Length: 440
Image (cartoon, rainbow, N blue to C red; front, side, top):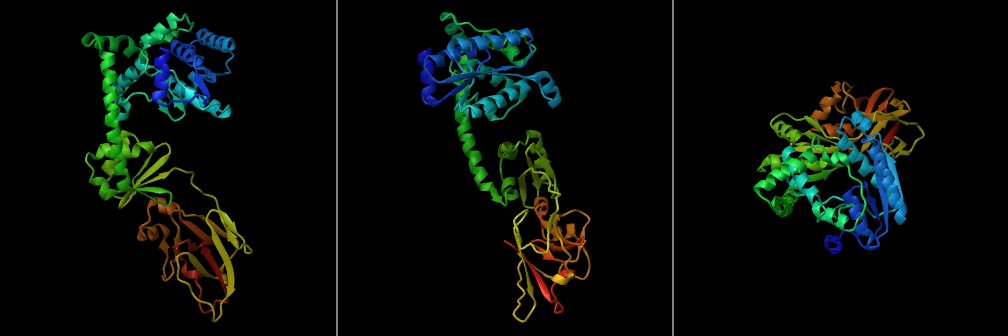
């Protein structure tokens, strides 16, 4: 088994002899097997053990076993105890999901802090089969049917080639001790139900069911490569970036077939679910402005595009500009000067420059985000206009509007920065001094 283990590592380029590995070790047969195989390669390793405190004394005995194993072979050991049940209840997730998140997050903390190159997990070939069947029952895109990856970022799985029976034989033949997790026999967990009851039924139909399924998963990986290439080409033709936003052309999007599959894959990296994708497609028939939120991104249906932007905290802070300030760099960069209006002065027409009658300005000026229900008198007009209507006239999307800054003097709008100044503050033939504010 040692030879096959090393061959799998080299063929998948999982790590080199110069790397340091952090082993996620439970004390169970899989992680103990992985440890002994790596130990014979003389790779620098450390142990990371999680006590999820879910099985009482049995969990504590697992921890003690790992500590003794680390002492026996002089392996650096990191342990952590989690109140997993309460954490799961507080976050509204399953205990299994909570344990998984806690484990991987803590492993990564240890890896970074102590300069390990990879986190090593002891998944085996049977885990690949069980995961496939779990995803089949839950529903999944093609990625859910292509198995567990041997390498994903900083996580490696050098035991994926081996079946559970091969691992058991290796451990027994070498008389290595390990801990048996009694919960592995409980069929109330879906993975155990599949392992102990569902797979044996398939094997009655096809005694080589496990080998057959692994072959099919391998074929699906090839299909996934072709599939991913098509999605990436589509992404390049439809996506464009603009001011830290991602825009998807509605015209090109509607031409895709099948639209649901393409849009699901295009939006999946931003955390949108299949249900949301169906709602987004339905919104394409409606008016602009419909919003959809994932955990980290917001999508807005605009006139010609779907707009994706990373969610950030709304900025309700006011920025004050005193009379003697000549420039600011936050939240936007402005250069501020004062000059006398004389025969040499020239009016510069540019959205990036605001020219104001200094005597009509009261300091400090205030720079803030826009709010609904606000009015101003756009330059050239004789009546007030609602700011939201001004934005509609200028065809600003919701995200565009949120990135607009308003300059105020004594609670009156002076300038929609980058767009239009207020008529009441414009330079006239009666102006003596001009306040010039320029975006740079």
